[in-house]
Length: 373
Image (tube, rainbow, N blue to C red):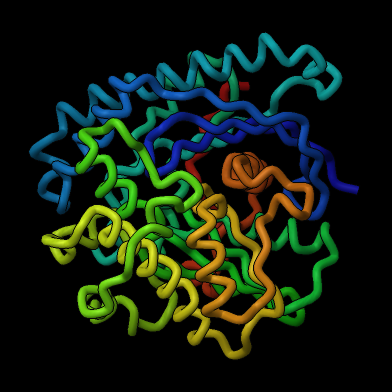
């Protein structure tokens, strides 16, 4: 039987609202034990800095233009991660029972992603995190995948597969993660995986609401705003005409790949409804790329709480749709658990990306490992 390793996974999503952290024990294969989950909210100042910087970076040249600002914010974000890890270590009294922490999985804050350019920038200084916490650290998870012909994302499918196996679910099943971008993990007979980005998730909805409310409203809680408006089918079709939606998987998106300019002129509620319909419609339409439709859709990510999205996905697909929480899994921490698991796989030299998940040329051991001990 393989050894169990204790890992902390750190995840900061495209919303830039804070850090999710999970402590797990795993062999990097089929065994996993969730020790605890933790959350650290960013203060408004750093949230705004992340949002402002993200909007300045629309191409790879902008990474150079704004490099000083990127470096400055990267250090701030890393220090916040350091302090959060140290706090978790101090508060988790039973960690000695797990022989301490073997590795950190550090996702960082994504500010630019373009698979065609083989560039994916996650702000986060792995060396500083490792030195400051005195722990082995895996970071920069996407680089090796991109260099070997992959899209660099999504990276969580191998963890979705682990959940699938541990829950003894019937195939075929689709895990749909609705974060800033939506992505799908489809698992069929023989535990075969296909995964890809389906389209915008929460990013356009959140960005529009924040713009119109001057930051006072962060998101459409429970989909209440979307439920009050009407979808403009003509403008929705303008979004759906984007070539991305006809592109065969594997494929990925950046949060800046779609603009809010298309919905200019709509009322507040109708804009939110149209953008929400875009998210739901593209998730369901993406199922057409699969050889068979799933028997069940399991929603993960922050968007799973949006009742409008949930009901539209369920009604449009005519497939049983549930939130992952119904399987006794905390849907707020699936990705932080995933990056803890990926860190263990990197530490034990097991692949985390595959031709079927990112389009990489061969199963790839990704992530840069900094060994502190």
